[in-house]
Length: 63
Image (tube, rainbow, N blue to C red):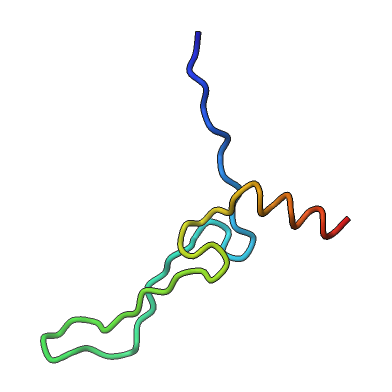
């Protein structure tokens, strides 16, 4: 008998699963490294998915 698996999370509609990106600030520091910022999706907070409960609630509001 196979083990039960959890269903896959739903992909965030705002970032399409690419929840974290690095953006350059357009320059280098005194050591020669690029200055970058790590930015996270505001909807999924960097996870790339959203919970099923939240998806269900959004569906009920739209109906």
